Amino acid sequence: YQCHGRSRCTWPCRIMVQSLSLSLYIYIYVTFSLSLSLSLSYLRY
Image (cartoon, rainbow, N blue to C red; front, side):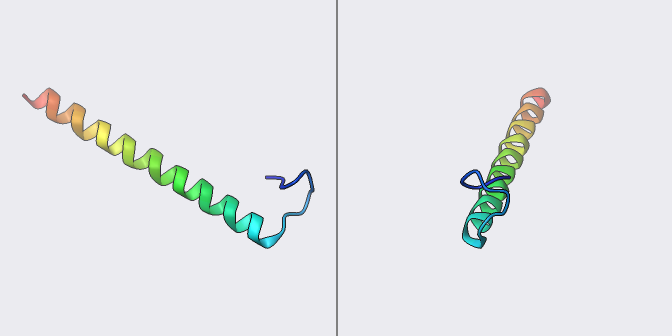
């Protein structure tokens, strides 16, 4: 990931990018597990 068009990232930018990707991964995981549990409960009844 390149910040401000440079090959090397500064530390705050790198930390911000890592936290953004981590929060995006957690959000996708939570929505996936919620939809999976909802579909399972829907199939059960």
